Image (cartoon, rainbow, N blue to C red; front, side, top):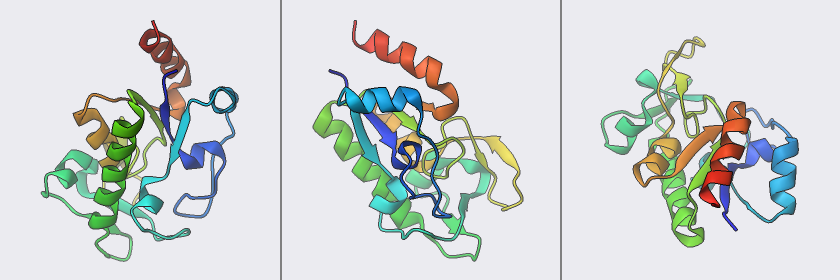
Length: 162
């Protein structure tokens, strides 16, 4: 059975930067019953507390963080890059351990965003880009979806199991 890496906040766990959560989602509840889900909050796994100051990547490009070209900064200017990279590394360890080929991550998160992210100005401006963990997962061939793409994620899972 194919395992799926899932952002813990999408499972209703209060790990978001503001102490909040999303979900539950019916599809995720079913996947959980089936034993498919491997939960992870990369930011918490990387050592950040809940709640924590909002963080963004200048330009919203997680791959550039992985390459050491950009930092992840909080709204207060604290550099939290190391925690974000550590969270991504923990995600990669789970991918290797469980043979994960698909992830469902929180949209627009500086760790998990898969299509767009905030631009680093803390103004709510969105740009095309992905979070640090999403970028790391893509680099090793993991398909990354957000909660806004649940039908596509279900279709991809069916394809993986053929």
